[in-house]
Image (cartoon, rainbow, N blue to C red; front, top):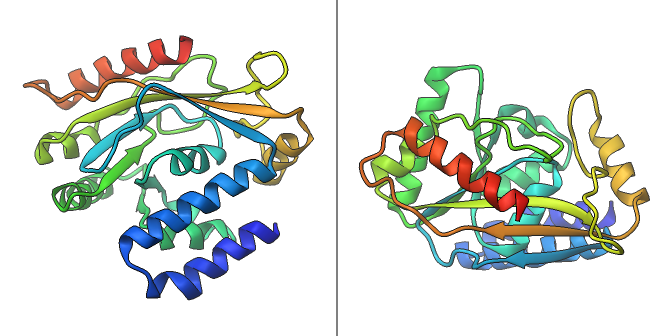
Amino acid sequence: MIHIVAGWLTVVVVFPKLTPLQKEERFRLWALELLAKLAIKLVVVGSPPGKGPWLLACNHLSWLDIIVLRATCCCQFISKSDVRQWPLIGTLASGTGTLFVERASRRDAMRVVHQMVERLRDGCALAIFPEGTTSQGIAVLPFHANLFQAAIFANVAVVPAALRFTELANGERSLAPCYTGDATLLGSIWRTLSAPPLSAVLCFGKPQLAQGRDRRTWASDLHLEVVALNRS
């Protein structure tokens, strides 16, 4: 909690004085340190994407997913609007460039797509969780296609990625960090802290362009790629 509060203070007090690159590096180091404090070892498989613009599509398990991704590569996120109201975490998300979307509103989704296009054309890197909700990660839920339209409009590649948590001792998949169903945020944090030491295994696929595919076809193809990465 001290580390999270320190991150909140950094966003509120220090970030306004920093350049975008300085903010990215400060947040990356903060995320790495948070994983260490949670006894989670970061394991990266494949090549993380470099400098933007690109769009990353990853499966979604937990509130920890953003921490793992930000410890690995510099990107901004698209998140459900509820997160903006979460104590501390909402400020952290807003201060690091997160775009918030009302998932039940098609009109709001299109608003966010246009904002994503602007950022991609400015050279930013963005990350989305196209399942639209969290799961236990054993299977990858179908992808929602709307946000992939931003990559088509901006003509940038999408990087598929899959994340899973495993027990460090035996490599078995762990569901401890999962934040699904009726679980509470505090309950998920407690299970994570109570679990044996964990690994966060993040697998990256090869970037791919739309190459004439519409967003639904592309989303379906990317889903198959993330499923394969999740099983690797």
